[in-house]
Image 1: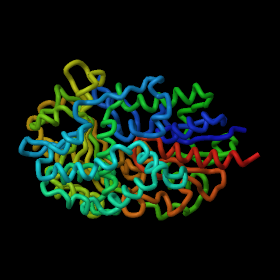
Image 2 (image 1 turned 120 degrees about the horizontal axis):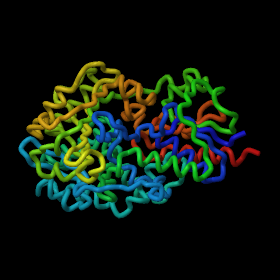
Image 3 (image 1 turned 180 degrees about the vertical axis):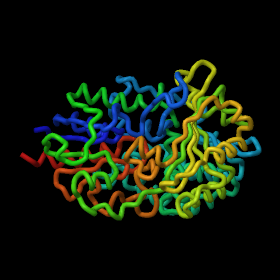
Length: 470
C-alpha cells in the first residue's frame, strides 16, 4: 500500500507530492492529461516555434513562494528572467506608472503628490517581507506566525476594501496601478481584504520582481516533476480519475482539483455546494511580427503590462464580469510579453504575447475585437503585427483544465469571505469528511497563483495525520 496518492499534476499537486516524498512517504501522482503542468504549461498554440503559456505566464508569487524557495528547482532547470521593470501600467496619453524593484522609482512614477503616500504604505513591510510572506501564505493553522505583530499590522492595512486604501492617493496613476494589482485575482475593488491583495502583489514585485521562467511556465512544472522522480515518487499521466476506486490503495489521497470535482470523485455529496466560482476569462495568445508597439516607453521595458485607462474603468470592467453578468465594454487586461527578456519563446525578431480579460462565468461570446480595440488605445498599430492568434473563452479554458469551472482560472471566486476562507468556513480547509481524503488546489488557502503553497500547506496536514497512524 502506498502512503499517499496525489490526483492532479498542477503546481499545487506537484508541490504536495514533493513535500511528502521529501519526508520519506511513498507517493504516486496521477494526471489526466498527457503532460504535467495544470496552470503552468507551455505549448505551441499558434505557429511553429512560438511557445505560449496557455494560462499563467508571469510569476511574482512563484519567485516569492516559501515553498518553491525551499526546493532545489534551479538544479532541475528553472531559471527566472527579469525585465528592467517588474510591471508597467500605460495610460492613453503615452505616460505610465510602473512597479519597479525600487520603491523610489515606483513612487516617482506616480507623481510628487502621491510618492510619499506610497512609500509610507509599503516601506514598513518590505524589510520583513520574507517572514510576512511565510505567515500570510501559510495560514491557517499550518504554522504559527513568526512575526504576529507585523502580520496584524498588515491585516489592519489590508483587510478593508482596496478602494478605502487608495483614498490616501490624490492622483489617478497610483490609484489605477493599485486597482490593476487587485484585479489579478478577479475580485471587485470594493471587496473585503482586496487592499491586502494589492499590497501582496506590490510587495512581491519590490522584493524579488515579476519574472517569467526561461522557456515558459512549463519549466516550473517540469522542475517539480523531475525532483519528485529523484525523490522516488511515481508519476502517471493520461490517467483520468472518476472515482476513488480508480486509484491504488493508499493511506491518504490528496486532490489538486476543484471542490465540486473532488465531491463527485470521493462521494462527498453536497459538502461543497455553497462554494462559489468566480468570473471567467477570455484569453488570446498572439504570434507577433515584432514587439508590441506601446506608446509608453516604460511598457516596452516590462514583461507584464496592465491595460486599463483609469481605476474607474477597471472597476467597471470587474463589476460587469463579476456582478452584472455581461462582458465589459472597455476590458481591463493583464498582458505578458516574454520576449522582452526571453528570445527562446519565438523565432528571431518575432514575439509571443499573452492577454486576458474578465468575462462572466461560462460566457460564450467573442471578445476578440473588443480586446484588440482596447489594446490599440495604448499600442496603436498592434493589429498590424499579428501573425496568428489562439483564442480561448471560458468553455475552451475549462476543456483544457477541469479545475477552471466556467473559465474561472482561480478555481473559485476570490471575493467576500471566500477570499480568506476557502473552500469552506473551517479551521482545517485541507481536510474533508472522508478521513483519508484531502484537497490542495487553489480552492484552498492562500488561493490562486503559481506558488505551490496550497500544496505545501495540504502536505503538512497530511503529514501530521499520517505520523500518528501506525
